Length: 156
Image (cartoon, rainbow, N blue to C red):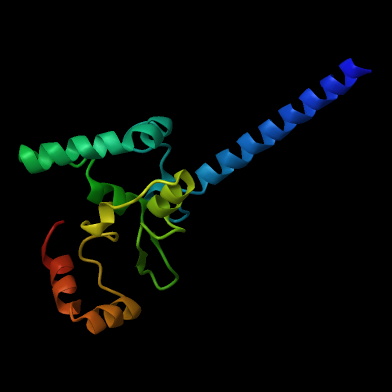
């Protein structure tokens, strides 16, 4: 009797574990936002599992090469990540990639990791015009012209 209860308990535990793994895999799949360029690709610049675990190392290495050594390559550039993983709303306005329902924001929220790249870097592709709500918010802060000028003319 005790053996069969233990067996049933272990089987139930195994089923719960399998369901949790499936749910987690489904959660991870949603981080590639439908309609983005990335959704059309089989993998990123490296295999998906490697990118999930090592992307910060690639970005840090790219930062050192760019800032300290003056080497600019596109393979691991943050702007390349944004350009590929960005999604657009119904009006074709890019959604900031660090929002909680977007590529970077969703995965970092899931992993409970602070996302501070976009404190300095653009969360939408360079040259993207600001939507009306963003423009109004920047007008209120008195920086709309500076932000739009930066997006129109500079790579960041």
